[in-house]
Length: 230
Ligand code: ADE
Image (cartoon, rainbow, N blue to C red; front, side, top):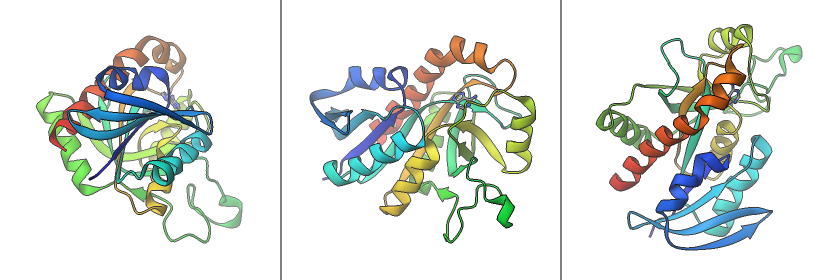
């Protein structure tokens, strides 16, 4: 039967899930610990990818090759880009794109990967609907929108404005699009759930440090609600 892959980038983002996992054994591959067990009687593999797109890509491919996952859920925090999002609010990925993929000198739009049919990787409609239902049940303010990923911590109002205007982003983080691309390449449904720790502006550093634990808890709560219904 099906195995659900659950990824967070940092300890804060997976530690609550780690407390809920039952009968788990831990397998280490490429330096990443995979916790294999059950949560709410569902077979899961929970892991911390580490930060950035390369870590996220390797982690996600190993989830496919070594653990046979048939769905992937990502939980964590992000910087808000959509103007209606406040700290703590949730973004459910409609799709994910790399904002630092930039071949504009050759005439491509920002985020476009040349010679590839798809550059913005769509999340699974069923998982989006389930995430939305979970947000409603838990009374969380959410937006369904594009998750932008890059190997950069964004802390500039000007950059946020361009991520919104040029790339239609809802939030910015450092892993989602890598997870999404690998899932797309393996034909696996995924969704990214992110709670806002900051606004990716001049206050981002201070806000991130203050709100990451709280935001991680909110994202975890949505994921837990989803898992019960899966
Ligand atoms: N994760 C949380 N906040 C972020 C930001 N401002 N930039 C990139 N990743 C983030």
